[in-house]
Length: 231
Image 1 (cartoon, rainbow, N blue to C red):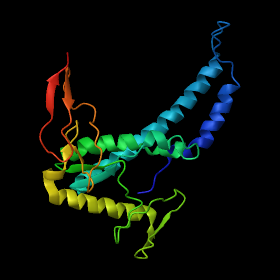
Image 2: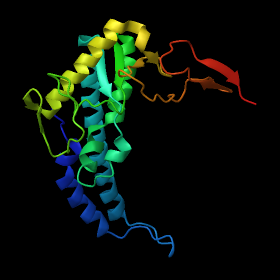
Image 3: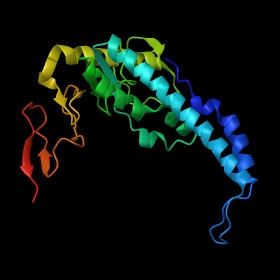
Image 4: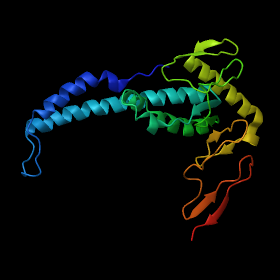
């Protein structure tokens, strides 16, 4: 499903309203001047456009996550470094407009409602660098390379489609392995599936009740968390 880009579509109107607001007499705290009536009306018009963009984004995410949770028993998402991606000034607006955090939040509780399972691929899982045909992992893959070309088996595939196939294979492995290689996070619905070998796993916030702290078991074990009271 393509990104609807609600904020991008509203940029022309937002720029026009923003310029109009800057030309009005706004509040001045140093001089104690109150904003003019025209400034207040212009600010209200700008706020309504921002609210409409937020409502459209929220409505689209709810429809998408509801459909996914109802039609699929197992859903895989990636634990992306969104805060690091936002440092790219050319992509920051589009990334923020997609609402990745809200998408994952809604999938978390909706998969639980529908009896499904949400699998969270580790942040360092090379879904884009791995060949979905032979399993060869590239050492480097620039963001500008939108087509994946495998030098080993000669596979030529769209970068996103190749990553989707690898995530689908990861979901099948998790389903086959069941609870042996999975560890629930603090919300109870997410499942992190480690890769083959040793992978660093950090504890999600909220795994311990108030007044208690939790300790994560060593890598590879499936025992429950041991809770000790904080002094």
